[in-house]
Length: 54
Image 1 (cartoon, rainbow, N blue to C red):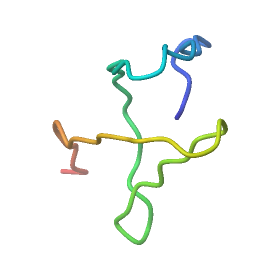
Image 2 (cartoon, rainbow, N blue to C red):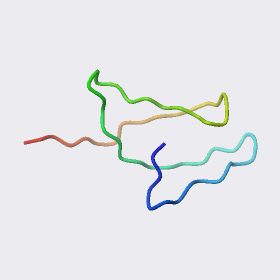
Image 3 (cartoon, rainbow, N blue to C red):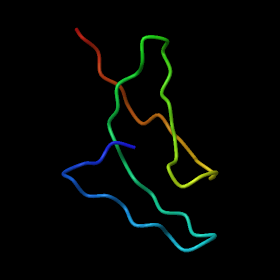
Image 4 (cartoon, helix red, strand yellow):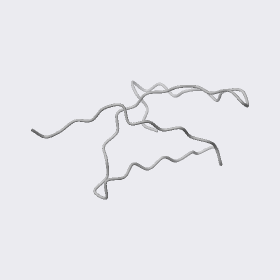
């Protein structure tokens, strides 16, 4: 997850859902990679909007 303005989210309590919003580029294979440095986790991702080069 890219850090915005150098702010890193703190780890939530177990079972808690914490929303976060980031703007990331789509890779050349039209995919976005989501990784966790804390081991395994559950992730909910939603496409909110997109930009074009028009």
